[in-house]
Amino acid sequence: MAEIRPRYYLRMNVADRPGVLAQISRVLGDNLISISSVIQKESDPTAQTTELVIMTHPALERDMQKALAETERLTVVKEVSNFLRVEV
Image (spheres, rainbow, N blue to C red):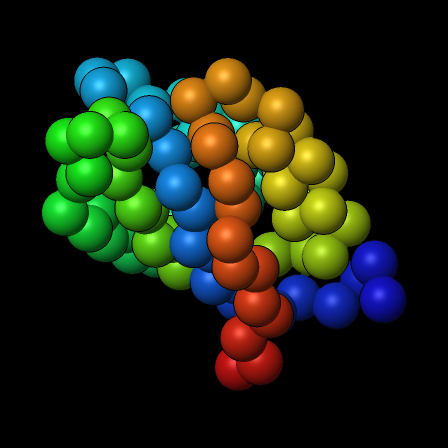
């Protein structure tokens, strides 16, 4: 399983402030994962959060699992609400 190379779909609830996407991008990049697209949904002014949807290029499962664990430890990430493998 660690050797498969699908694309990945991530949906996460994050702090709505400058630099959040940069932190997440750095974690993915450090783990050899390239971002294909990013969509930021409308923010929740009360909670001061927003939803990010990230689609990656194909990447090794082991790299994605490591990046996912590191991403979840970032203080700006409130929740990774969806993680899907997308077969190409």
